[in-house]
Length: 300
Image (cartoon, rainbow, N blue to C red; front, side):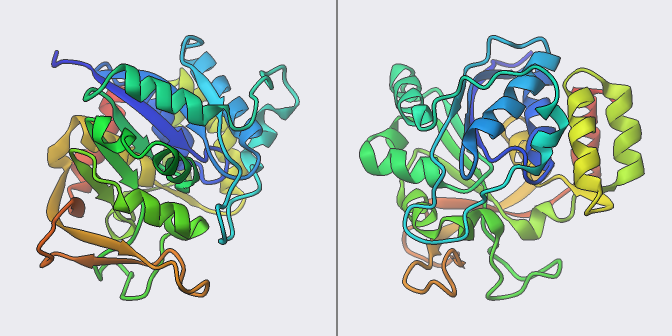
């Protein structure tokens, strides 16, 4: 087996179901050393409780879990509600997550292991924006920054002027994040992740077969399925490319984020012809290979 990769996950788990599907993958991925989970935006304590329940279902009570900042920093809709908390609300679960503790945990964890950690952010960038602003050296101490964020190229129903949810929930934090210069910066955008979709019935069958952390995710998914007949695997794709880079094809260039207009806040623009090319975006995905990889790791 290849060397294990330390991953720090920042998530808005409990709103879209794919965050929980992503966490299950990281818990089952033998090459992943999950060094911690931090939660962002809205009711960060409920989000942390959900993450803890999934870790518990995987037999991984050792994973540190910390609640972050509710956000947004200056403007943006944020993500206040956590509908999937319903799945654990009536059962005993942890609630001892002081809001805001995530930032110091992230700072210390990254500083203790310079050049080793992959920071994977799959929610609004509130925690990252605050962390990078408070300690500007942090990005340079990462091994890689991987985001599920933005929409960069036309295709798959997304044209110029389209905005992605994680980016426009907290536009200022998104801009701060994209101005950071880690050794490697990979962003998986909406026009690529939306090529990885499974219907509700297939998800139910596969999650039930996989068991473990996906057993609690299956209960959370039933809340999700009330409003959607499918799951788009946005966040699991971003996690998977950490371990199987070849699932996507990439292009290098410059991402800029709109912050001067509240109406367009969080709009990500892509320039592959920029003299500076600090960002790498996914431009295509082999969705069949992705699903084979994902369920090969988690089961089902």
